[in-house]
Image (cartoon, rainbow, N blue to C red):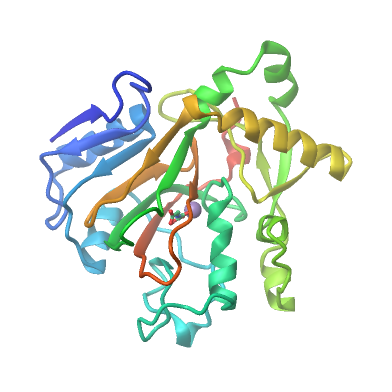
Length: 294
Ligand code: OGA
Ligand code: MN
């Protein structure tokens, strides 16, 4: 197995391309450690040509750590296409028909187009996400990733000191609200009540600090809401400048894996009448970001 920077000139320490590994069979302990080491270094890893099914994706994902459950989407149990171990990142219903333009599930899913970190709206958020492309549109539909370690490092000292111990509140109600999606049931409002997360967190293996931003962040403890949102917007603008971003152009059978502790990502537009079928497994962070202080 070998990992090389995808863009050795522009971002030599962000986004690695992995070769010499076959995800259809179980990994050796050495390969598992090499994947973790690659994630520590690059934050995003790209595996090409991995024709895997759900079961193989689950075996690979579980060899890296415990999974979280897909409790962040709005599909009713009887409408799900995949088990609760997988997030259905597709535009399909359970009969594999493309969702209507105004389907509630599609509109909710458009929240993925805002820069975010997966499950930051959960008390115990996500560690790694693994997204497998099963069917992709003819064009467009990239996924972009931003390096929150580099974004943190590039802050001036005054801002670093100011943000160091800030606590933000995160909820899917905030992120969907940005797009004008407010059609939540009472149960969803209870389930997605805001949770607390640090704005600066420390990676337990590398010791590096990163900005833990997400579209789900809608407030800063002790701050008036409009001031907090304006500041979070400024930080997000800073953190998503092109020099911090890798844009992944999907090929069939790509699997892309990212560390939600050190990156944000977003989906880009595509022709919504074409099929885009992606499946995501997600490793739990096991603890809150509140326990990962600098
Ligand atoms: C996700 C996600 C982006 C995309 O799977 O968590 O945000 O491009 N996906 O589908
Ligand atoms: Mn996501």
